[in-house]
Image (cartoon, rainbow, N blue to C red; front, side, top):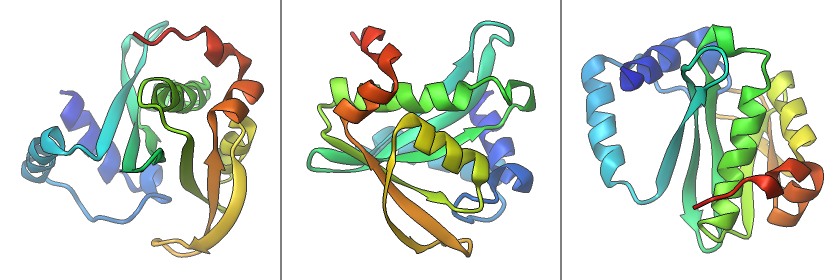
Length: 166
């Protein structure tokens, strides 16, 4: 069911206008992606679950493109409309990065955010990302290149030091 939710959300153009365009995903394509994902050592996708009120998966966030002590973070989506406006995306992004720093021993996490994606851009800056460059976006327009290290993440988000990672 979670895999199907990811597919439905990814096909919703209103939720994915700032993600890399990939066309319509069929159930068969989603199953094939999942089989390949299980063998992919260069990508970790986290299901985002809201456990206070909704008690269900509401989205996903991914660490990917690992190189040395760095990785990218992104492919984040809150697909469940009832979860919008609760700060779940921001918390999930911070938690995924904290796992990257503490468990995977990453030293830097990078990403890109479309300038017209005002909510995500504001969110990334609030989390502590620094804008370090820019490039043309695959969907048109400009994306800011962003990065953060463990020290900055903890300074801007002091509650992460309370997260215990086993």
